[in-house]
Image (cartoon, rainbow, N blue to C red; front, top):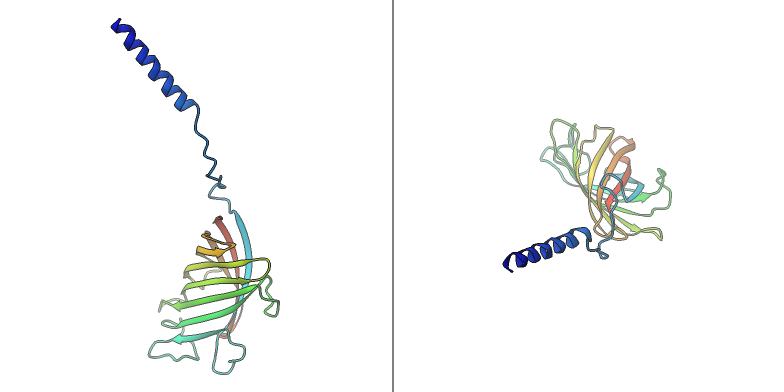
Length: 193
């Protein structure tokens, strides 16, 4: 009788394992996500930066709040602007016209962080106030300004963009000396909740 008990136990274990492997348990609480190489949302905006130069206080949307000892707060320092810290509260538009109705504000700062080349480090948010979008998208990263396009990280958000992540491609769309520039921001979100 002992050999039959072992055979029954082995068959029982075999069927138990077979059923466990053959019938995966459904997980209804986990929603499927698109493959990581396809964005779940794609947006394009323009933001317009007008740096205070000592004469344009009515129109300025950005100001130099920190400068190296050889600089001042109304003129960007030297050739690469190294050491300047600029804060901004720029209008965001859906097209490249500064006078278009803003859909929100780009609020944050940039630091010119290299002596030998024209580059900056950015930390900012798009804060939306339109009926189309509510909440904010947060960005951070290096901006090598001499490149035609630059990628920075989308590191989170609120409202319609809660906990979102992705990549924003920046392109300088226009500039007028050291007082005005316009960035085209092409946003690809890969985590959308």
